[in-house]
Image (cartoon, rainbow, N blue to C red; front, top):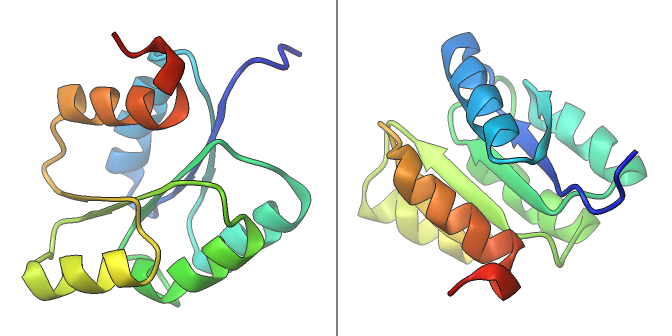
Length: 127
C-alpha cells in the first residue's frame, strides 16, 4: 500500500451523492472510506487515521452537526468539510462553532471542492 496516499472519510447516506463523491475522490488520487451514520464514523476514527473528513448534515441518527464535536475529539487535527442541502446562516454558524473547517451547500461545485481538498490536505502543492 502507498503510505503517501491521503485518506478521506466521507459520512453520507445518499447513494447518488456517495457515488459522485467516490468517483471524484478517487479521480483526485485519494483513498475514500464511506460510512452512512455518525456512529460508524466514530468507530472508524477510533482505529484509523484520516487526512480529511467530509460529512453531510442530513444523516440518519445524529446529524452531521451533532457529530462534529465527537469527530474533533477523536481526531482533533483532522479538517472537516460539512456539506448540506438545507443550510442557512445559522446552520453555517453552528457548523463552524462545532468544529467545521469548511462549510459547503449543495449542489456541490466539484471544481471548488477540488481546490478546497488540495488546499487542506496538500498545502505544499499549492502554487
